[in-house]
Length: 302
Image (tube, rainbow, N blue to C red; front, side, top):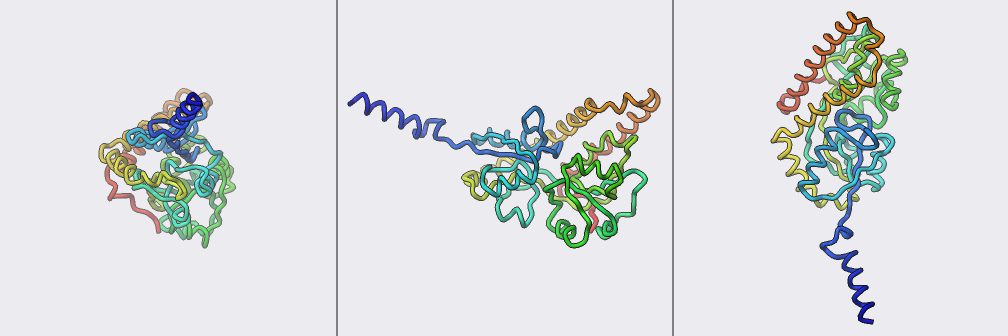
């Protein structure tokens, strides 16, 4: 009898004891698998600025978590709304999401832009310039409360997975693509040649990425701690360093996957590379300015 009591006591301690890892909840987080360099899927893992940043924050706070890869961005949001995941690595804040998510302090500003095929540029100084045209955008995306409402009321916009959306633009089935600026930079990096594109200026607007927690999750109890450490990471330049690291890394991944340069003559390839180096440096300077001058965000069309 004593043996049985001791055994049951030991089992109870293993399962419920405060010193046991079995009693500690593991929080589930996910993100958009098609938003490089902020988040993307690589070798069955989510990589990028946001996963690395949140990993640093959670490690510092000793918050146990696991990453779940979900097929597309719309389904990630549905999972958070249904409470099957606790958090989202990176999300813009809007009225619809406020209903089921709590948002951290902003950690990464990002403009949204209009992309067109080279030669199909048009004057863009106001959102009304899009009214008579057909647009596409990635599924599940938000571009800020105001522009989202404008799309619904005024624009002919279709939503697809990002590769399909870019294909619609390349085939001339759409006049323009609305997309996050950083994603546009990396996905269009090798489209500046035979499938040339142009990113129109000014930006549609600028939103901020936040870490978002499902309102049903116990993780909300740690939001103050998460915000404190996030603020320290931003002030210490960690976000900027992570961004430049993953921006350059993603460009390299695209370059290795493409055979475009093999189709060009040596002279064409050299000229193209020179052009791309110039474009890359311009993009890099724009990114650094966004990271360091958060009050001086770029002008936007309205």
